[in-house]
Image (cartoon, rainbow, N blue to C red; front, side, top):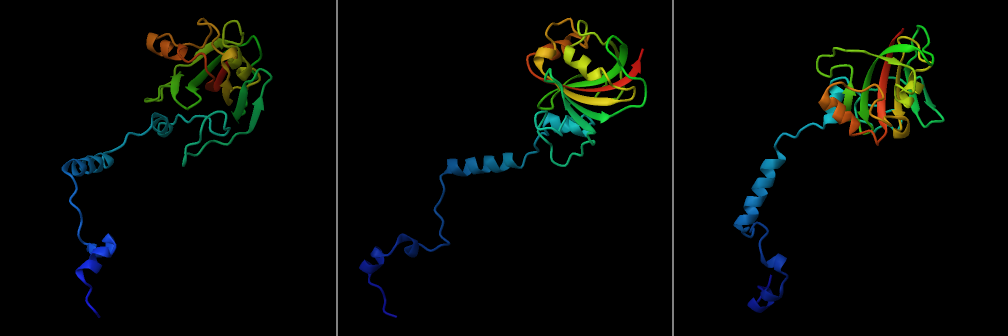
Length: 208
C-alpha cells in the first residue's frame, strides 16, 4: 500500500487523523461538575408524602380519574357503585353496611378521613400513626354540617363506608360548619383548603 504524503494526511477528516483512544482533557470545572452530579444522583430520594400515606393505610380515591391520580402497584378496594348527585357530589360505595339507615335529621356517629384531590392528608378522626380513632357525632342537618357530607351520609347503613368528592360550594361555606378540628393547627390547615374540592372517606358507626 502506497504511503500517504504529509499534504494528503492534512486533508483527511479529523476523525481519521486522531486515534479513537485519545481523549481530550476536560476542563477542571467540567470534571468537578460531573463528579457533583454523580454523587447527588446516587443520594437516597425522599418518598412522596402521598405514597408514604398509602403504605400507612390511607389510600386516596383512585377509581375515578376526577378524584385522584392512580399510584402504580397499590391495590384499591372494589367499588360497588358510583353515584353523581345533582349537587355535584360524587360518591363511591365501598361497603354497604347491614344496620339501620341514616335519615335526614338523625344524629350519627362517624369516622372520617379528609384529603385534597391530590391525595394529601388534611384531617381525620383516625390517627395516621397509631390507628386509634376518636369518632365524631354529627346531626344530619345542613345548617350544622357541610351540605355535601350530609348528602353522603343520608341513606348509609351502619357499618357502611363511602368515599366522596365534595365541591367547595357544598363544603365549608362558613367556618362554623362541622366536622372541623378543635385544635388550632389542624383547624387552620383544613380552613386553608375550603375553596377547593375535598375528598371524604366516611364510615357510619352508629345512628343515635
